[in-house]
Amino acid sequence: MAKSPEVKLAVFGRAGVGKSALVVRFLTRRFIWEYDPTLESTYRHQATIDDEVVTMEILDTAGQEDTQQKESHMRWGDGFVIVYDITDRGSFDEVAPLRGLLEEVKKPKNVPLVLVGNKADLEHARQVGTEEGERLAAEMACAFYECSACADEGGMVAEAFHELCRELRRRKAVQGKARRRSSTTHVKQAINKMLTKISS
Ligand SMILES: Nc1nc2c(ncn2[C@@H]2O[C@H](COP(=O)(O)OP(=O)(O)OP(=O)(O)O)[C@@H](O)[C@H]2O)c(=O)[nH]1
Image (cartoon, rainbow, N blue to C red; front, side):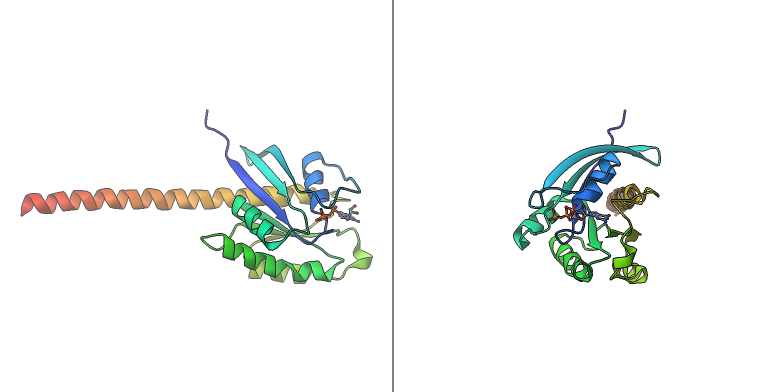
């Protein structure tokens, strides 16, 4: 039987945006109010996404990491969830620099990621409009979700993680095709060389 794909996903965002709450919601479908804010944690999780079993390793980073720690976690990950809090404009302003660092650390560029605006249940305290999130995601060419780890009726949190896995799968398929195409080209070139030698 084919081995299920394994993907490493890292969750980034300013301290307090709800990274741990989102990861715990995704893994347990529950909301837990408080976590140790300084800890980073890794979890393993299996899910069936479009009939394919995917094994995820999820790193919930600590919001107060220094640049060196961030870079090391960025090197570790295959795909990224960048989270901001819709009630905290400063957390939204930190998204672009985080994406910038990702693009510096990861090569090739155009890193697989999804953008999540969390705490959508706190509409009365909103500081970042939905359309602003949409616009930023369009600029970053990634999917965008407004979610609430606390009241996730629509299953949006899982959808964000699943979409990231789909994006990684799409890219792997494209890379596989490109590799196959280049090896076919090499074989063709070798045959042509041989034929040229024989005929000369
Ligand atoms: N109302 C509301 N509160 C939330 C939501 N998600 C998280 N919180 C609260 O926001 C606070 C911070 O949540 P955490 O999950 O610890 O945030 P974090 O991003 O992991 O923070 P660091 O670990 O410090 O980086 C906690 O008090 C949570 O209960 C949400 O969707 N809605």
